[in-house]
Image (cartoon, rainbow, N blue to C red; front, side, top):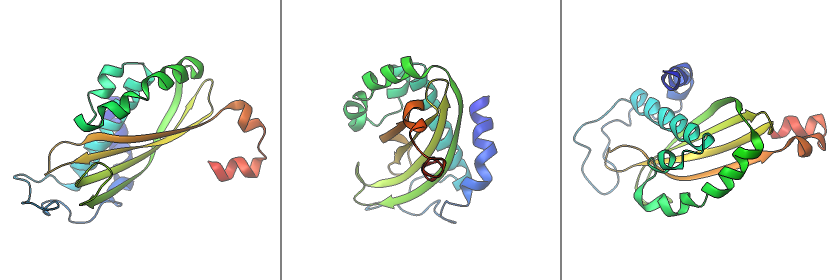
Amino acid sequence: MRTTAIASAVMAAIVSSAPAAWAGIPLPDGPPPATSRAPEARAAEVLTLSARFLDARDSNDWNAALALAAPDAVDSLEAVREPGERFNSLAGPRLSRRFTSLTWSRTHHGPAGPGLYALVDYVAVYRGVPHDCGWLLWRSVWGGPFELVQLDRNVLTKRDAARLSPNELKDLL
């Protein structure tokens, strides 16, 4: 499966960003999860979920995309449907996408409550949009599955890219 290949291809770089021994460490204000998974498995899980969300978003399968969201985040993520559909109609097919980083955080006061957070940065190229980048924020509570809680997307169109000098464009990418 392509999603698994993507996760495997970047695993060596991703795992180095995870805390060395976070598995089994109690999450905020409570006991450790009943089962612990290795950092490599959690990284693969987050990258696989990220690819699934972005694939669904790119194909306008919003039900599948929003099924990955935390229940408390569905309403705010629903707001990206209409702009996403407009983007998809203008952008055309995706030519490439890669994950550029995975950052871990464990917090009592995260943007969507306590838990283990994984922030996945990505860049993509579409036929009609040469520079698309953003991030997906995933949360796991008490060792449970990761659920999407926030996202952001930034786009640089061909027209806007043409207005930039080569150095300005290099600094952005």
